[in-house]
Image 1 (cartoon, rainbow, N blue to C red):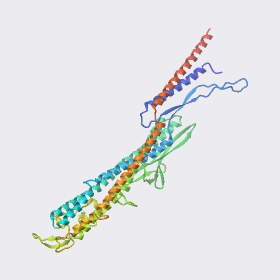
Image 2 (image 1 turned 60 degrees about the horizontal axis):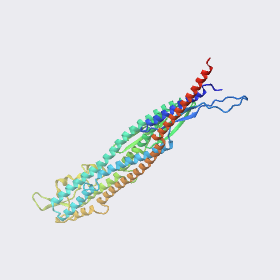
Image 3 (image 1 turned 45 degrees about the horizontal axis):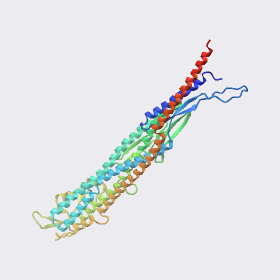
Image 4 (image 1 turned 180 degrees about the vertical axis):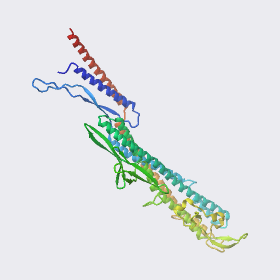
Length: 501
């Protein structure tokens, strides 16, 4: 037979369970605006029933003994977490890449009066004017000045592209430091969570912290996350394993309490860099070519878009170099095909004719055939700066002072098919296409991430209305249980009064 306090014990379990329900609802309401917080639910189960034997030794229907809050768990959908991190890695990559490419595009100042296209058109228009008066020193001076503007703009654009790449590399360096910090924290949380679970605790806040770190990590680099479980006594522990793709397979960044690291190594020249990762288990280092996250965007920009010598195909930097060299080497070629008059002191009649020298040179290369490495030091030939009469207008030495064949050839070169203006326009167009593509990909990934975030929030997020309903239900349960306890207490008082002498 149950004791006289049997009903009171049941009421007590109900009061305790209702108190847990109210505490959980209060915790959820308090953390409604806490980033990364997962709503919690109390799992109520009936306590083991009381069975009283009958005369035959069989068991009659069992009597319930009450209720208990067996556990307080987070509401979480692991498949949504995985989908969220993959999508967030893509979105971070596309948005960061879009920002970098827009920065590259802004360096060009195209279209507009301050762009290189406008300067080139003025330069070749200057030659058209010079062809109408081949002996004009003033017209040659204008040509020389706009030539200097071309050299300065090419250097400015080249350096601007390099600067954007350097900024991307600097940001990637900071991001790698954050990755390494996150990996260490993840490993430490793995250990702490497993220790708590091994003694029957439910470390919900620590689990939220771990998930938040995984979310943060996915914005920086593409990762794969899996959960490993282990049974310790009667309890189950869980730890996450984090990997990232690498050459020859995947590198394990976190495995239980072990963690690896990422290393960014800048190239000896230019903004290029290499990325490697040390395996948390084996300790071996492997090259990593990230395709996701902000680090992946920086890697693609500096190692592909701004690589002057890509392993295959072309890059934005190789296209710019080709357009710039097509311009300056083409101008040099036409200039060197002509001749210019040499005057004796005080004479207006040429004493001789000299072959034209290169229009654009560097301090170390005056041959007239420049390479990409010459672009940063590009300048108008100092000989031409000192004597604009060395700008050639004719291919006929004597007595062709009025001949304009070379000036016309230079003007025609500027607008020729596959000439410098068209070649540079093609580069500008490709740059614009890259920006448009990145913006479209960003818009698509933004929309997808927003949908997944909404689904995730519906599952793990806190609804104030729902929690208020839960709170009212728990309060009603507590009030009813208190009534039961009051009734049981009254009955016991009556019993005690009846048996008093």
